[in-house]
Amino acid sequence: MMMLRGILPVTLTVVVLSSAVQRPVGAQRSDSTRAGVKRDSDPVSAMRPAALTRPVHADAPSRVVRVVHDGLIGAGIGAATGLMAAFILVNQSNVTDHSEDGLAFFILGVDGGLLGLIVGAIVGLFRGP
Figure 1 (cartoon, helix red, strand yellow):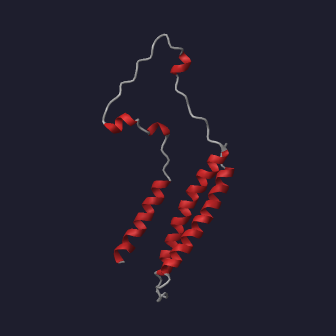
Figure 2 (spheres, helix red, strand yellow):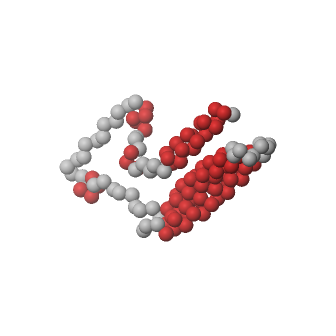
Figure 3 (cartoon, one colour):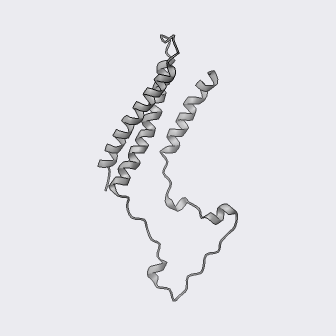
């Protein structure tokens, strides 16, 4: 149990920080690089119209996608915060009976996730175009 107490805060910190990083779609690699085979792209013909050779940018995400995305990020942050709060509360010096520690972790984790989901959805609703 002592080892878990040392690893848990570090693990939660890494999870929270890594979930906040958003990578662009251009960072994804094609399937051929995973298989170890390089695929040569076909050269663009001079007869091909210019409209087909320009890069196409993805449309801005819709409001629903933005609200759901921010809500899920908020839920993750809220659940991690609730678990950290439960960890602090059950390890106080005045707590002597640890028979219901799991219940505290469950309740505070779920409540934190729900509160984070609501706050994140509200932020996504009013954020940007």
